[in-house]
Length: 280
Image (cartoon, rainbow, N blue to C red; front, side):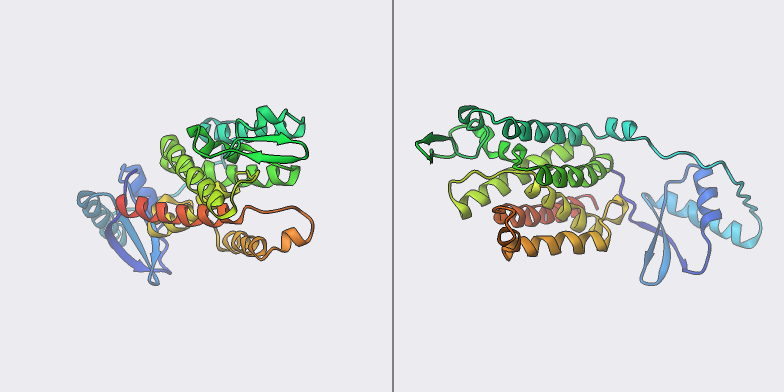
């Protein structure tokens, strides 16, 4: 991804830079406009492009260059289908999660379900007897596809689409796949270490990981453009606190894999910082 970190000009916030941006785009000059420390800054990827921005700006402000902006019919935004085609990894993760939910919804045999849990298990009488983790490497990932209720699967898939598709369109499918695998592995392992052998699952750890990645990464690298809005951050972090305090369990909605959520959030935030700093 191209990093826009060369500052070409910095002007007052009251100045309308739309005509300048139009002229630069017409000339093929790559640029982004940011608000920094109470001023507007135009940034480019190279020094040569920065000099071109300065030249066009001076010509425009001196009256040598007349820029006309003609209104164009408003174009329809990308359809859901076109967005989906640009987010294949996100869609695949959601599809596998729906398939995992179907296993529980249609009461798959314990033997089949045991193939996808973090630790293998067997039903002995009325009890679950767990084996040792790590016997099969896929077990570190597959619990994220298991969901235990309609609210669980709906909440996670909606946030997976919202966060995953934005990151995938911004950074590419391979980067999202790598993020997903690392966050899933770490969050599942942390949940096992803190909670011990148990039936746990869901995309929530990954969702919080992507939230942390987008929050920290896009804050350090604003050009990415997918930083979650502050109200979203407040809602998601508030919900995390409610879960950690045990309110959800008290209300009868079942146990929550809090260690996976917190572990995912911290892992994603760390990866966001690493990605952002490496791309500068």
